[in-house]
Length: 425
Image (cartoon, rainbow, N blue to C red; front, side):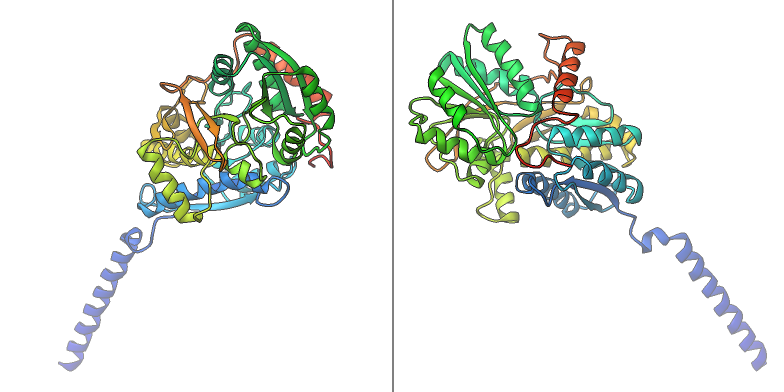
C-alpha cells in the first residue's frame, strides 16, 4: 500500500512539473520582456564639430528618453546604439554600415553637414534603410531613404530676404563660409534680390575654419552695403565679428542678418550680436505653450544654462515623428515605417509641422528674430502658417541645379568645400 501511495505521489508530482514547464514555455513572453527596438544615433561626439553637433545629440536623446518613460513603443523599450562620426567624411559611412549591419538598428538619426549626409545617404540607399536628417540645408536632394526634417531655403532664406528689403535696406553684401550650403543659398539670394529690385553689391567666402578676414572687412567697407547677409559657420565667426566691430561696422551702422547663428552659437563663440537679426524655424523664446514646456524639460535634463535651439528642436521632433510612424505601422520595420512616416504631423515646440509626402521634407514655420543685449533672440516676425518645402527652387531646372552641384564638387577636388586647415578625411 505504501509503495502504491508513493508511486501515485511521484506521478502526480511529475504531472504538476510538466504542467508548470508547459505553462512557462507557452507564456515565455509574459515572463521575459520583449526585445528592444534599436535605433542608431550618429553625430560627431569627438572632432572639430562635436560642440556644434551636441545640440542634435541632446534633442535626440531627450525625445527617446521621453518615449521610454511613457512605456516605449509597441510595448518595447527604444534602445540607443551610438556612433561617432568624428567629423570625418570617411568615418560617417563606416559607422552607418556598422550600425545597420552589425547592430541591426531600425533607423539612423544622423548627420550635420551636407558632406556627411551625402555619404550616409549612399549607405542607406544601398541597404534600403532609413535616415532621419534634422538639419536645415541647401536642398537639391530627394531620396526615398531619407526624411528631411530641417528647413530648405524657401522656408528660411526667401522669406527673410523679403522682410529685410522691407525693413532694413536693399543693398546687400554676402559673406559666407566656402562650402556647398552658402554657395547654393547665395545663388538663391541673388535671384530673389534681383527679382525684388534690390542689389547684391559684394560677395566673399572664407574657408571653413578660416581666420583671414581682413580682406573681407576691407571689401565690405568699400562696397558700403545696407545689410550684411551672413552664412559663416563654425569658428570663423569669432574673428569675423571681432574684425567687423573693430572696423566700426556695428549693428547700428550695418546690421548683420544671419542664417547660421542662433542663441547657442552666439554663446559658444562669445559673440556680441546685439541689434543683429537671424532667421530660423525655431527660437528658444518662441511664444507657444508647447515651447515653454520643452525649454523647461531641456534645462531640467541638461542644466539651467543649456540653450534650446533650432538644431535641438528639429532633432527632437524627428524622433517623435518616427515614433508616430512606428505606432501607425504597428512595427519598427524599416520598409513599413518609410511609408507611414509620410503621413505624420505634430504640434512641435516651434508650431505645427508635417511631412510632405511628395518631397519627404517638412512643412515648417519660419521666424525672424532680433538679438538683444544678452544674445537672446526676440521674435519679431513669423509666417502665418507652415511653408511648403521646395527642395529644388523653380528658377533653375533640376538638371541645372545638379550641374551646379557637380561643378562645385569638382572645383573643390571631390569634396563639398574648402578648408583652411587639414581637410576632413
